[in-house]
Length: 288
Image (cartoon, rainbow, N blue to C red):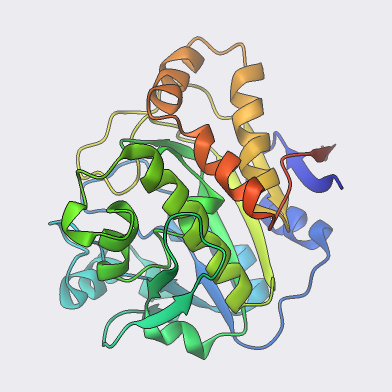
């Protein structure tokens, strides 16, 4: 089965909302809005004003989790302050999912590498999720998109170390690389299972640096903006983004691809497809 992925080369807040409506999957109950708050000093993350129309339409709560590395987001007090400094709490209710323990443990019986995922316990307060992803490169994962938001993004601080370490948190920066990528695929599937698939994904291909929004010192964008994508399939939407990068004739394309390929970024998509919670086959539906 091919998934439907809606695409527009027009990048505006209003177009984000238009594509969300085209997906035509109502998000019911209490809605978590998962996005990237942006590390202090990062110049590339997508700002609250950009996401405001779709968040206002859905009416959910912006959610984040603390990081597993030093910075302004690894401790709840600093993270809350940063959410204010970056404008998130000016416009929206904000919930740091792992602000207080203990973590929620999601079982992954069919996980290839990890059989459990540690997420912020406040995930229990939500019935559905809108995943707003800024598609770009990543120093470890190769690229950041919907699958990373579901896995590392929803994981607690400890859970992030657990995924990075492929089940051995003490190996957060030293585990076998492909096992880390496969652990992300395992973890993403557990969040989908927990929310019974009540999730919509939007990826925005703008400000595409080789570095993630988690980098306080990030390289400037290396290629031109491409567009907005929306889908109910996290695998298909990430695959479509990768394909659009390959199809681009932009002079900076090869620099971004070097980051993705050198980290074997496609392997996260491959591992997720094997787990079966989405498809790499998709129909790209272009919207003017």
